[in-house]
Image (cartoon, rainbow, N blue to C red; front, side):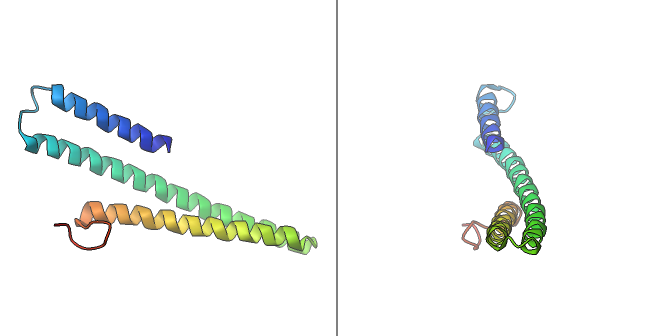
Amino acid sequence: MAEYERHGAELELRWAELIENPDVGDTQTSAAELVMRHTRQSTKGGARILMQLANTLERSAGLAEKDAQRREQAGQADDAAAVHHAAERAREVAQRARSQAEEWLDVMEGGEHAGGGPRE
């Protein structure tokens, strides 16, 4: 979450610089281009973070499954079931994170909105 807040703060700072910078020009096109460039950079950074999160969750789920197997072998069926459940939840969250990252990149690169159709 701190990463997203940092990106938001950077965007606000850059927007303020744009407004105060006489070299940028007075056109709305320059402002829009600057905002779009920073939005793309932030989107790529956010997608990268989500992919890293997904990979970490997948590794954690794998480790949890190994732990659950050890618990089953030790006769701790209830504990093993709880760990299996946690591993499954981690995989579900990893898939959602990965899907969100891919959607953000598709929207950014493909010109589609979140609904899946072309932008108007």
